[in-house]
Image (tube, rainbow, N blue to C red; front, side, top):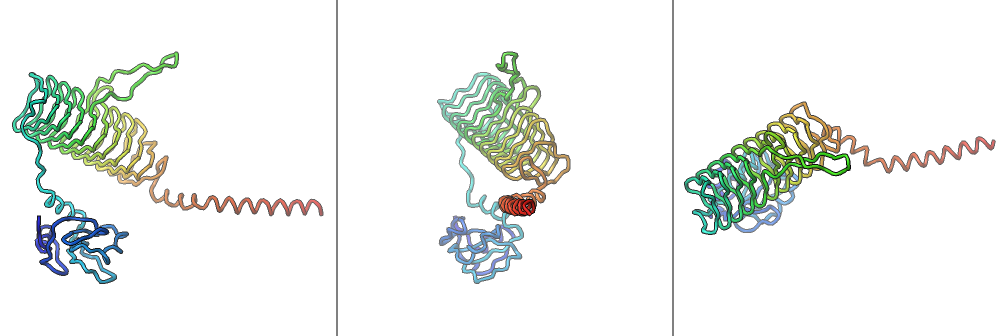
Length: 349
C-alpha cells in the first residue's frame, strides 16, 4: 500500500509540514525508521528520536514545537493516537477470515448454524448451540451445549466455550481463551478436606467485547458472570465467578479479579493488578499496574496505586519517603550511637 503525506493528512484531518508528496509504504517505530516509513510521536520521552529518525514522515500533535531541525515530513494532527489507529486500519486492510465449513468439523445435528459462517478444521459445535450469521470459528474451537454466539463474532484457534455461555455480536476472542469454566468454589470439611461447590450459573458477554489470548472467565456459582458492552480484556487475565466488568472497561494482562466483584463503567486496570472479592469499584476508576484493590471504591474517577491501593498522588508522596528509609535509618543509627556516647560520658563524669 502506498500513500503520500498529503493523502494521509487528508485521511486524518491533519496538515503537512515538509514534503507533501513523500511516499509512505508502511508504518514503523520512530527509533527504527526507514525509507517510506510513517511513524508517530505521542510520548514526550521519545522526542529525542524525532531528530535522528530515518522515517519519511512523523505524526505529531498540532502544538508540537521541535527544538532541533527535523529531517522527516511532519503531519500535524489534533490527536496522535486517534490518527495512528485510523491509519493502522488502512494499512492492515480487511482480514481474510476462513469461509465455509471444514469437512473435519464436528457439528451436532441439533446445533443451529447461521448464514455465511466460517468454521475451521476440527471445530466442535455441541447440541443446542447457536452460531450467528457471519461468525468465524478458527480450527480447534470448542463450543459447548446450549452456547449462543451472536452475529459476526470471531473465535480464534483453540478457544473453548463451555455450556450455556452467551456471547454477543461482533466480539473477538483470541487463541486458547476459556470461557465458562467452573468458578473456584470449594467448601471446607471438618477433616480439613474441601468439597466442590457446583457452579450452576453461566457467563454472558455483551456486544463488541474483545478478549485476549489465554484469558479465563469463570461461570457463576449461581446467576451470571457478566462482561458488558465494549469491554476490552487483555491476554492472561483471570475473571472469577459472578464478576461483573462494566461497559467499556479495559483490563491489561495478568490482572486478576476475585469472585463477585463489580467493576464500573470505563474503568482502566493496569497489568498484574488484583482485586479482592465481593467489592464494588466505581465508574472511571484507574488502577495502576501491580496494585492490589482490597476494599470498595465508592468515589468515581479515582486513580489508585499500591498494595493495598490508595490515592495515586498520595502513593507517590509516600514512595518518595519510602525510598529515603535506608538513609533515614542510617542517620538514626548514627544519632543513637552519638547519644549513647554522650550518656556514657555524662554517667562517668
